[in-house]
Image (cartoon, rainbow, N blue to C red; front, side):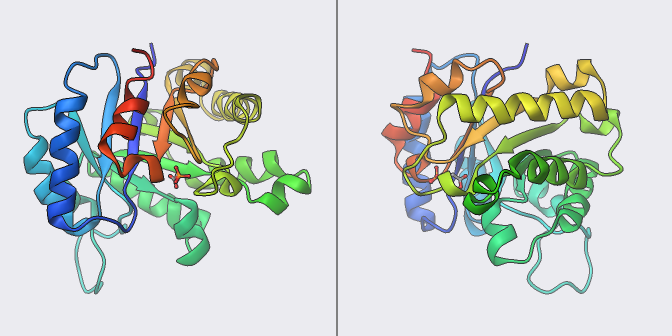
Length: 251
Ligand code: PGA
């Protein structure tokens, strides 16, 4: 009942020409893939161009962040409304790089999430512990506070277009994937938490993605876990063949 979702986070990479080239190759490679939702997240400046290029294909477009106000004197910010206008259907919120380098907190994540949901975007809400948090045994505590904080005040009706992405910080861009068991353990924990916060029904219909050094050769094992419903892919989404290899995990 949970359709797998594979999202490529292009981070701060790709000029317009490079973004177009990548998505045009992807269109061909993923055209026969069924029952998997495919999302790409280019930089802000490439969103409109990529959105036009994927029109009429199953590939959907996400932003990597947004602001919570709709408009106003907020120099440098981009609102969910403008993301929709540029062709986005999704937005990544609370990525660990934003928490680490741009002072993102559970509170700002929550404001952004509410604004994005109100604008009709699907939110990919990222949570994940650092290496020192894992080593000190506080993984579940950190994840719980990020999930509760990010979803604070969001009703079960509004929760529908939400996807949670569990991305252990120590696994991002390091080549060090969490083991399938480590990932499954946290995914199961998040699902249980959602069932406490909302209901069993909501928990069992919410998709939880894994992120952190996902590659074509480890996706199958991750997707075999009962609570892993897809992946948020960084480095391996920058090349069409490796991303298509991940999207086609079932083939
Ligand atoms: P990675 O990044 O696949 O390069 O580890 C994942 C992410 O940051 O979403």
